[in-house]
Length: 518
Image 1 (cartoon, rainbow, N blue to C red):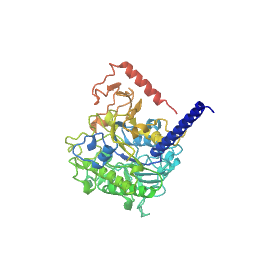
Image 2 (image 1 turned 90 degrees about the vertical axis):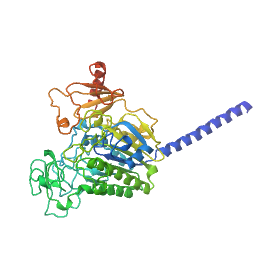
Image 3 (image 1 turned 180 degrees about the vertical axis):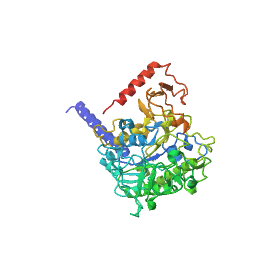
Image 4 (image 1 turned 135 degrees about the horizontal axis):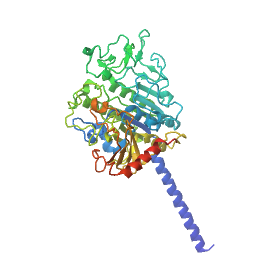
């Protein structure tokens, strides 16, 4: 064998060795960042872009959430899929835009709006080996449309992929004012005191806010003047279930304890916890230990309460040595609202605080504050601190988590969800969505800094309650709107007439998205 041939063979072996060694190192690196981590989603209600001190809040401090923002990635252009709660929750759990199922804010006795036959986010995670749990506000419907609250209540979360659920069935301002754990109302002790619910007419012996305003702790509008529970009148009417009725001030302790119990019971295997807060939704009745902790009255105090709940769950993760193996996503379901049915001094005590930050609108609105959410990802030792301007939506959580755990997504499932995992894990990655859809009472479409708001059909009435009752700029008009958010983040200057070609371009893309089927 010639010396030249020997050298060639040795060089080949060396290259092969280096290649194999590099491959081993690459595999170890992949394994180091892609084991199946625990996943916790903190889903706050009605929290605006400017409602955290890490996002510029005044009048309230949120040190526990600020820690997540300071040690994780703070996003400036992350969005809920809708400007109201039920549609946002639907999109997060299905990976589909809510308009595809005509999802809207539900009554308290509405049937489940997620079809149990489709694969949901918790379904996908269960296939990947996760134990799944939801604690808190639900508002996605229960049963098939004729719920008997005294018996087994299904279908519900357990039929769409969750292993455990502890729920406020709809919202705190809607009856029935009871907790549902898995398939049953808890503490319903007296069979001779059955729970009955109606969203049609007054009935039963329990007082209501219209006939007995003297019993109220907070005055309410007509919509919220149904049955009185805990001194607060609610939407709808109920009777019975006296032993099962909740006390609003107990929400932070009961819900947080249930979330921690789920973590403690699931710690030995990968778990997914969807912790869906009631705060800072109305009625705002923070526990007495949080009252007066802000300068903004009950709404500000409810933010403090929410921050405490977040901190307590994080401490529970730390106690179980789970922080290094838990991806935390913190966000909100829609923009802020001050007056949403009850007189709790939210407007009067606002001071210089700006719930929406520099953005226009709020809950219900087509403007940016309707869906632009304070959003944070945190994973100790895996996510480096930073700020990201990448554009993405909560509808993308489905595909992103599927990619994280390398779990295939079922065919014709989560058709609107895009993999945003790179930006969720690194602030250096700034490439987000090409197009972002925002739902309100119309549809809007973002492309980079351009935003198109589709006009209302001329034969359809524009909802005026947003401006009149909620004092929020709705942004719904009969004319197309186009804004350059880079130069006009507050959407004050409609450029539709000046950039007709851009309007046509975005309108065309929006129509394609609406007609997408898989």
